[in-house]
Amino acid sequence: MLASSAGAVGFGIIAFIIWIALAFWPARVAGRKGHSFFGFFIFSVIFFPAALITAYVVRDRRVTVR
Image (cartoon, rainbow, N blue to C red):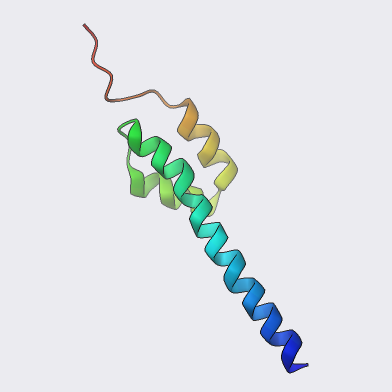
């Protein structure tokens, strides 16, 4: 029983690390477009699919109009 509990904890830690690592993806995309990296990171941690779609759809704030 102890081995299965340790395996479950180990799996949970690995899953948590992957979850946090994936949350950086939309945050980095939005950050490159001039939006809040931290805001998109938190949004991505809570709801990854919507954050990813939103990060690619939002307009680039750093584009200058001539």
